[in-house]
Length: 328
Ligand code: NAI
Image (cartoon, rainbow, N blue to C red; front, side, top):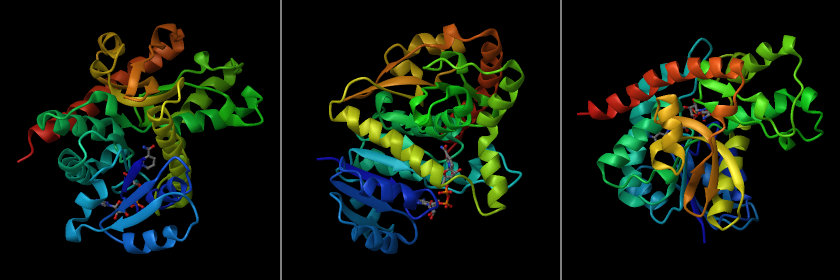
């Protein structure tokens, strides 16, 4: 039996993500939590004739406790999204506090669950979560994931003309680093099957993967950021975690993790100088069972991109850790 909880379930991402989780045969029980509108979203989704038994919760009547108790996997898309002109870091002030509250709930009610953080800035919200879990003595680094799958999904889509795949998801492209602008590094040299990207198209392609989110923010013209593609990406990652939990072998997904706590991650942390980084991770019944080091095979150009990413990430990570350290 698998229980999944979505925190921020009434939002632009939360609703379509909850729909996908509701229709997944892998989930037996689905809890939807938000500070608003969950009764309506839950009533609506509960009429779908699929396996998962679904309930909605608000903060009143110990809603967070009921949503989280017994959860095996918690997906967190709670928090404000970007408007045109904003960076993900501009969201920090509001979203850091939201993530803090929700992780405190996880500490109390389901400390062993897999935690998938979508709320931005992921480069800082994941370190916030790690720090809180660590302080509470319940941190299992194999269970904490920053969801960077949308960057992978975008890379697969944007290279379709070079991959020649009818189904773009068949092209495996590792995207590493962080989840904002120049911290995102697609490693096209490691694509499988191999890609032949014309030299004069390479920079534009890298830029599009790094700043693809801005295209959506601009097109939505002040009403938010990626929600539907993010729901797809969040579902794809959640499904991978659940499949591995249920015993399926050989599932690998890039995700933003605490490297020193995951097998083979310490060497990557040493080489990069950062403890939090997105790398391809082999998933298992215990969560992140192994970090896969592919950075050494990066091209010269990719190494330059990695240096820029690491510089940016250091500040983002520090900001998250400081937030928890300075909390009253
Ligand atoms: P939204 O504003 O449509 O939805 C956010 C939801 O969170 C709202 O329903 C709100 O009521 C809820 N919420 C606020 N405080 C809460 C709390 N304390 N507990 C529970 N729920 C709470 O925003 P949207 O578009 O769904 O985006 C959500 C987050 O996901 C944003 O931070 C956004 O930047 C991030 N995001 C991350 C991506 C990624 O690749 N990791 C991609 C796109 C967005």
